[in-house]
Length: 203
Image 1 (tube, rainbow, N blue to C red):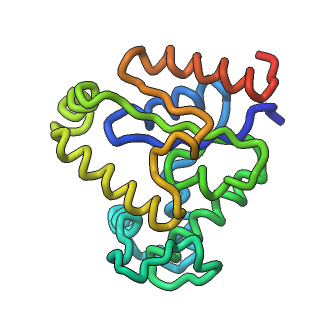
Image 2: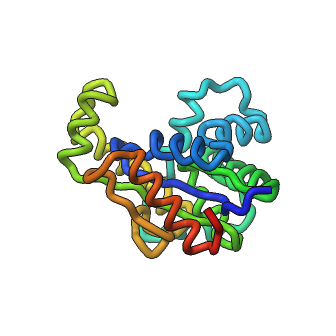
């Protein structure tokens, strides 16, 4: 059993978080969970007939805010609408997988799902606008910065609604890393060194 903690990675769209997660998984020898969680959750809810695109879109939908707004995290185990059910089912899947040992979760509000677990290290990945704009053109099929920001707004709305926390707020993570100023490989090495120091792991 590896001494590494379960690692959760949340990220701005276009900041290279997915690639960074892959590099960390390879360097640490840990399994990376991303959209697999969506399909596991969908199977539990009997939504196997929906496409991955439809399931991902479900993650972006929340009820409109109103004066009587109550964050979903206050609702206990009430499943309600499909997107609420997906959030609960994904969180349950994440907790079940985490019990089996160290791994890496990308997105899916995993930092919140595992907030009561001791051996967890949460990372938020961000980047300067210029860096994200350049990657939007070269990595994300020519997406503009405005389009990237629009996707981030969806992520933030979903996360904020279901957790009662603020997406990207530093205090919710063990470390916030800006990928604009070094290679993802070098940043991964730095993160590993820091995780080992914080968790008292011999490299």
